[in-house]
Amino acid sequence: MKTLKRRSRRASFVRKLAVSCVALVALACSLAASGARAQDAVGPFPSEWGAPGLYVIRNARIVTVSGPEIENGTIVLRDGRIEAVGASVTAPSGAREIDGRGLWVFPGMMDASTNLGLAEIAAGVTGSVDSVEVGDINPNAQAFYGINPHSSHVDVTRVNGITSVVSAPAGGVVSGQAAIINLAGTTPREMALVPQAALVINFPLIAGGGGFGPPPPITPDAISARERRVDEIRRLLRDAEAYGRAQDAHARDPRGVPRPATDLQLAALVPYARGERPVMLRADRERDIRAAVRFAEEMKLRAVVVGGSDAAKVAALLKEKNIPVVFERMWTLPLRE
Image (cartoon, rainbow, N blue to C red):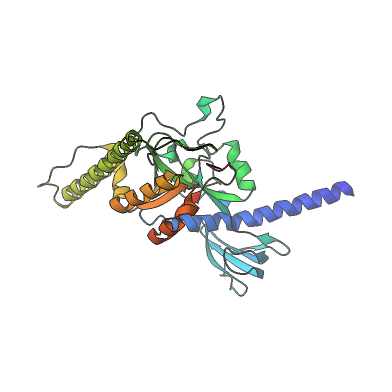
């Protein structure tokens, strides 16, 4: 009897996960698609999502993102996306029904800054890490192409309720382009919701400070060194704007205007320099966040501050400029006493 009870509980748990995952993956897909106006997702939805197709989950207790829980609710899923949610939703004819009686349906969580799928064993096995490119300026490097869909981290993360992630490259000044991926699928093409989701820039810092002792003074040399790196990014973005204008001029008049020489770095930067896609600016200290905000405003970037240890100290500025923050320091010590 004990064995049968354990099996029954396990089967119930698996059913809960199965019902949850159908809706969660669709919800994460819908979220990612709303931010992908400038581009289409790569490839079809994987068949294990039940898409394309029409599904209805009935009689489940639905936990919504921002509203009250729905008792005995219904969810309609069409081609991998949530079409309707509510207590009195009418199921379309021809839909495959899933009985959720006694079960819960939860929205999937999203990790907005990780290297999931790019790094397997960070300590001592360099061949399993594909998150950093050679050189400081790599806007054309795309995390999407380095995703390992068979990483053991993917399964563990998905089972714990995170259904989508922003997998981002690291290293250098301009690290490359992050991808929004869903944690279901057997190839990067199946997993990618937005292959080129955001540009990752490690915003140049003023060296010095940190720890629980008194911070060292900020020297003019340190400030000058930071400004030189910022100028390098500024010139790169302006060159990308010019490159984009040259491409547009050639497209309008192919015979009269020569095609600009191919430059993979500038071509990759064009949609970010134009503000069409977000730029993730990594910055933690108050002075660096303020500098990153000024830079984003000057260059008219769709900025997102990533890291943000001191974000609370500049909350008013971030709210005024409507700049989101992906806070990464929940499980680390503070920067200073």
